[in-house]
Image (tube, rainbow, N blue to C red; front, side, top):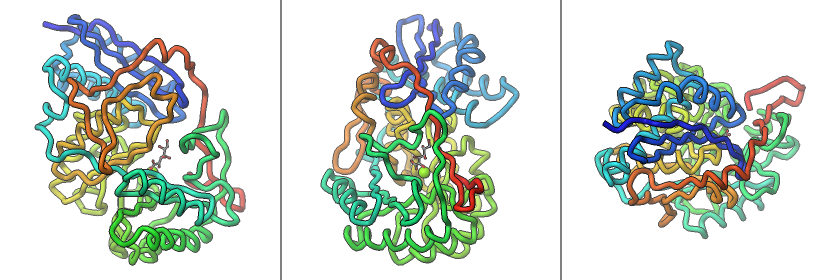
Length: 403
Ligand code: CS2
Ligand code: MG
């Protein structure tokens, strides 16, 4: 029997921080997992190094379900982003190994392709409407069929979704959390107007998405959803903080604007009522923060029963390893909706070389065995960990708001 001989955690910062798990077997097969939890990276690195890696050595790498249950139930303490990201990294690395051993891409092990590729949406943003429209046009020129639009709000400095002129937008870009301003009245006034300008520019059928980023109460979100109904958004994302599943019932009952939730949720239990009571349209849990392929597939399968579609988180804080895993899963599930795709920066690709490619508005998985992603460990050493935090939002009166 093949056994796991080594499990190693690599923390590196090629343009941004990533925590990567490398699992090696007695047959010399290597599997890669992503354990990145933006702004809390070292907590997961320690969880893996100190509490998980020692348990993996000697185990059979083929027993993915058993290892998943062993780590989840065996910890006694369940769920939560740190635990579920750590388990995800192990799970994804084991799927990578299984594919390499079988000589098959992971999507074949998951039942084979149900579509040619995963349609993705890109992130268009601008400090004001003209800048936003230029950025939307850039994505359309590159071949994107779906675009997320975020713009600055006049009178409210530093809202979510705007870059600081870097190669790609990355909200975790300060050694201590940056404090950004927030005004719900300005947002409710200005956002529907800039979204209308985008809809006007792109015509009626290109998919238009928008991330509210947890900023509204359920009632405010219902009002927002109504005010953009005629713009036919593909979705409004995280309209209200996701912990309060019941809050979505109110939004749901008052607007037909589709709702997407889940990037900060980590288990099937966190989305259970949202799905079974059809309070949302898209579930955004990700392969790296919701327990890996094994657990995310369960969430997607549950969602299928209730006509909820998938729309996984795919910001650049998910490394190319988890983005590869996401695309392999996306192409197999019947209820796929869309995949978020923020292309990684050039430096990131000095360490991670993913096999997926962008074509016809889709990410197409590689046909190489496993996940088809290579990781250059020597290059990773050139980019040591660089502490970075996500911002904090404050209302104009100085009180803390959901960021
Ligand atoms: C976002 C993220 O991609 C998204 O939809 O909400 O950019 C999110 O802010 C980051 O992933 C946080 O790490
Ligand atoms: Mg989001």
